[in-house]
Image (cartoon, rainbow, N blue to C red; front, side):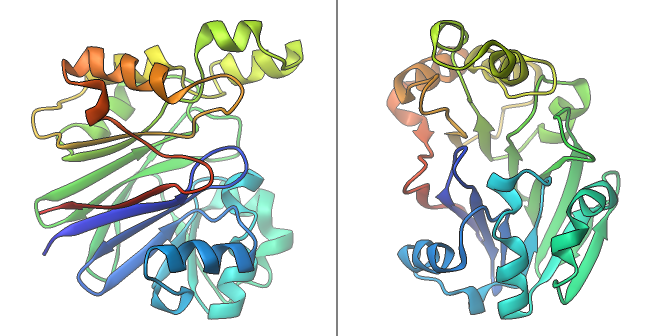
Length: 257
């Protein structure tokens, strides 16, 4: 059974990634209003009623802001870590069905097996995910301040990778952010810089990699061309082969056959 995936938006103003295998569809994060989420899903040929669950990576608003209302409206189970729930529980009280994620144990939703893994980010207990359907594997890594051996090992052997390229170090240094925000974004618990993302590719097994999407790009501190160039140089491929997820449109369906 093929595994396919698409984004409804990626960036500091809201995030959401749909992963599908067979009749199972999950939404990873939802940082959009209810109406906006419905509209963005419709562009992919989906409705909220088509979803089986919402998975939450962490409690920052661009990832979790729309989860509670979506889950309550459509009676969707929500999966998150205990740490995320602690910081989110005032909103999570309206969620009809809450499941806890152990960052070290896989879990299943329908036909998808999901392996969470811990990441360094300035949230309570953040995770990212590897999605598996048979031998097909999709890895997702955003909102990480630096690359760890555990991250590289968790993502090794995936055929598709959605990878944070949040900022270019030079653009961040010269950009409009105040010093405290620059320190937070560029720090060990902030966001991955283009060259850090490229360095991850050197550390992990990329022998089966067929899809790479640069994600969570800063609109003020990065450009698609810079993100593509950094990843393409490490993979020794044409820059145009690297897709870039955008804030407004995310990216369309991609399939691992």
